[in-house]
Image 1 (cartoon, rainbow, N blue to C red):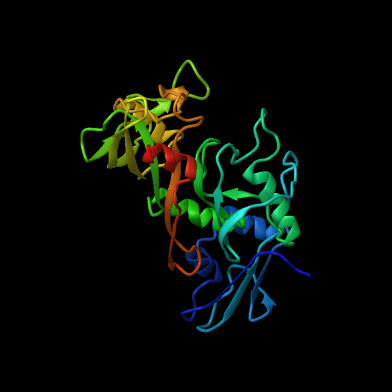
Image 2: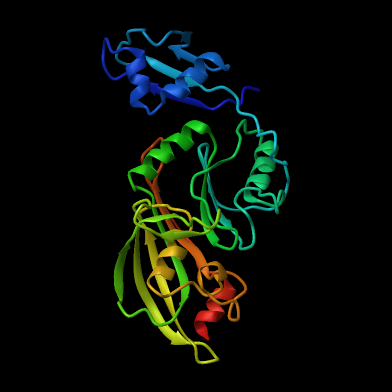
Amino acid sequence: MDNRFKLQFKATKDGELLRNTINQHGISKRGLTSIKFNGGLILVNGIEQNVRYALKKGDEITITFPPEVVSDGLIVEHGNLDIVYEDSTLLILEKPAFMNTIPSREHPTGSVANFISGYFQEKNISSTVHIVTRLDRDTSGLMCIAKHSHVHHLMGLQQKKQEINKQYEAIVHGHVEEDEQAIIAPIGRKETSIIEREVREDGQFSHTDVKVLKRGFTKNGEPVSHVRLRLHTGRTHQIRVHMAFIGHPLVGDELYGGSRELFDRQALHCVYLELAHPLTKEKLTFSSKILEPMQKLINN
């Protein structure tokens, strides 16, 4: 069975070169080179053609991409995945807390990528793992995974154009004064750490919107705020860095000044994901409720 990823579409005008039509469907030069040299195929009306072929309106074009193989260093594992949406191009799933998105030296197994590779193997999907929206180990909630490198490329273009709407809910220390605010502050790597980030003048442009949902106190009388956050950019640790920058680190986030006395991880959950389907352009929206331990903290 040929399980290679395929795209099919029709020519819309006479005389256009096949290369130009392919380009209009978002296939990169790198992707085209891979098709040509690594086992892909370009057919027009069922006949193999080169990219200089002149099309006629209504011609049926089929692009077959080369098969993908799992990365050598990725351990294939089989386990449960909380999948909320799946089609031939995308997977949307709920990631639990305390699970890496990709393996690390400390946690070479048990990551989303490990289990996705096993799932693809079970379903005979000829693809390696392509993470579109990544979450930190402690962060729970919605994630998007592409089923093919071309789909990953298309979703990457959406991200660059800030067309993927990612929203989170968090519990932070203190009472955030402004009901709504935009934090626009550049983020870069801290010179004394390979992990930690900070707001710095030479950092990358970073924009986070913050809306206060609730202000309250813990059982011990400590002020906390329940906030909703929207990312306009996707920098590493962006929410954690920006909230610490305005003096309200996430509860449980020891790296950026939070305390674990109230919660055993950073209190952050991806609650909303909106994107355009990479092929049909249909708007897809997904929502998720924060997990019970976070909800209990808010209720208290």
